[in-house]
Length: 180
Image (cartoon, rainbow, N blue to C red; front, side, top):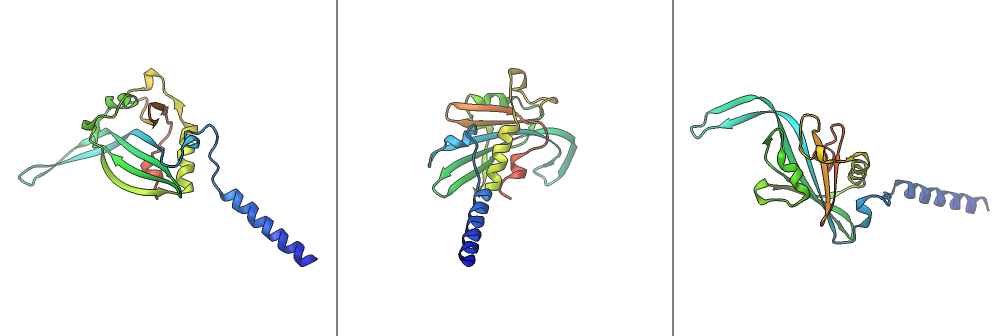
């Protein structure tokens, strides 16, 4: 009898632990409504300090002064039968401030120059980051649309014509969090 009780106890503990480790997507998350084959597009525009290096046709390298640049990145997150996958795209640096970001809510333009960098499977940890950023962000108002010195990190989540434009306080950059 004791052995049977011990076996049942161990099985229930292992089931309880498996339930605790599994990812639960909150009902208010935009990820919750995705069906297999559906995708979301995450755009993040953030400001980085950088020094620009230029190479001339003659092979000379010129170093500029340190400036603030905006970087716009795009993740296409797709739900599939096994979980979620992501395609990562980055646009070239733009001089700060980046006025194009407010237009992302309307339609992406080809001249923005997104280039596919990588494709990977999202882990539960990656999904938790996406959910946390969605919770942490505050809804942008018209004043927030342009990236300025007061507003240096934004996230737009698009699902077709529906979107959320969020201002993210802090240095939470998707490209530094996901796919590690």
